[in-house]
Picture (cartoon, rainbow, N blue to C red):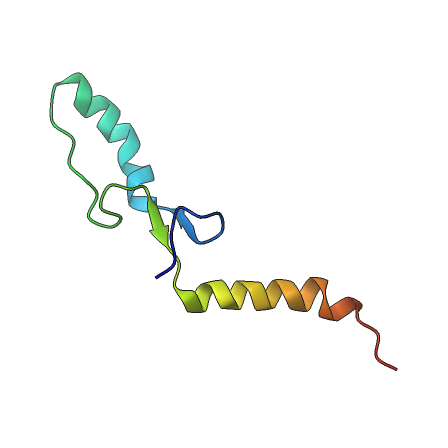
Amino acid sequence: MPDPTLYGNGYTCPACELRREADRQRTVFGSTDIPCNQCNGTGRIAKTAAQIVAEQVAWTREHYWSQKRYA
C-alpha cells in the first residue's frame, strides 16, 4: 500500500478541507473534534499503486520518450 505521507503518493483529503472552517467555529463553542471518516483524521488520502504508475508513465512519455531520437 502506498504511503500517503510521501510526496506524490497521496493528496489532501477534500472532506477535511471542507470541515476546517466548521471546526474553527465548533472549537469556539467547546465541542470535541470528530475524526474524518474518509482519511481517519490524517488529512491525506493515499493514491492507489495503479494511479502512481499511470502518473509516472505519463510524465515519462512527456519528458523522456518525446526527446529520444531513433535512428
